[in-house]
Image (cartoon, rainbow, N blue to C red; front, side, top):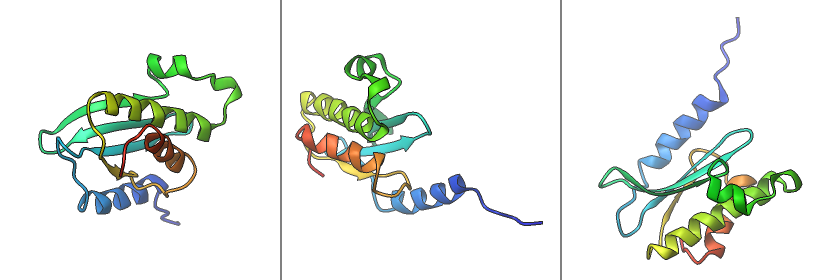
Length: 124
């Protein structure tokens, strides 16, 4: 019998490797990314206080109002979610963040989300 490791377990192992090096503070929070087959989630986390500062997702009503999901590709939707999170961060006075890709490869939806955050004026 073949023992094949799941992709998600490999992703979690990579994520732990990244998390050893990256942590967020109140001044420079960590942007954590999770993507599923249909949705993408991002949140700003202060690891010192163990609290989520801001969050954005395709599931939230504020983000859904900005999107026309039927006519957009997943990468375009991810970029809009990133813009929304970036705009909320700038309103709170957060201009620098650390990007935690969550064990995913930095391309496709993850890269689009990061580009959207940068377009809103947040640096990392």
